[in-house]
Length: 84
Length: 255
Image 1 (tube, rainbow over the protein chains, first blue to last red):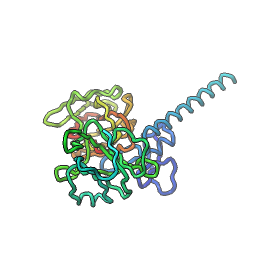
Image 2 (cartoon, one colour):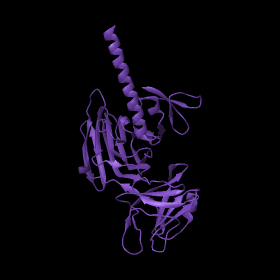
Image 3 (cartoon, chains in turn cyan, blue):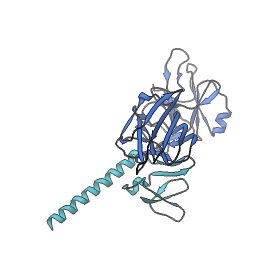
Image 4 (cartoon, each protein chain N blue to C red):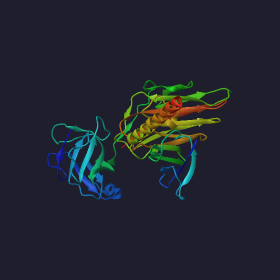
């Protein structure tokens, strides 16, 4: 679960500027900030909707870059431990 | 089919392109048949029909996107048939293509391009990783997707997807009409994904999920930021001793 902050346009943020509504959700577990902030999260009589407002292919690219960075960091750590 | 002309059209053309400042102004107008009304305050310098992004782009130009089918198709010429399949409109403003609300005047009324999904059972398949048992039936124009479970210690999820992916590039909304019923704890989900290996509906690119008591009506999902091909997915989550049924009468993709 992650806390995200929703503005008046239902757009997601990873920090609160004092005007946003805090929401706990597992929709964005393991997602980078750029991915989260390119989405809307809307609670209404329709149910709970999650949808991108930035081009989705750009968000996927940002997430892929984030996951590659994590992989590199894990590998570097493992090598550091092995060489210690 | 690509036309690139300046102005509203010539005498041999069976359509026109016209700007309206507001939707109210458009709806009040009664122009000639096949007039494409573009809601914009930016002067239209030219217009072009194309399935792909025009290049080079011209400031003020309106790009009417076309597909291989459209609910508002028309003959472009007064003589001979050149069928045009319009879907949506964009205008080149400030160096980018900006989506414009648009409608076409046909049969004395304004209409939008839209796509209704055929609901037949054979168009659906089980999600590879959302695999609880379900039943699926199509009778009297209603697709009935149902699952039930006895008493166990967890919620189980059934998932199906429409086997033909849908190109969402020119659509802005998915409107689902139906009736969803349950007798206890249950979860409904509808989403669009480009990854059929997802294990839950919230991993879809866009989704809506709810756990209301029985509901009849419409659910609407914003798909403006999705381009390219996506699969439509439905999921049902069933708790102990639950029977849950989703009766869908329409999946409507709107431009």
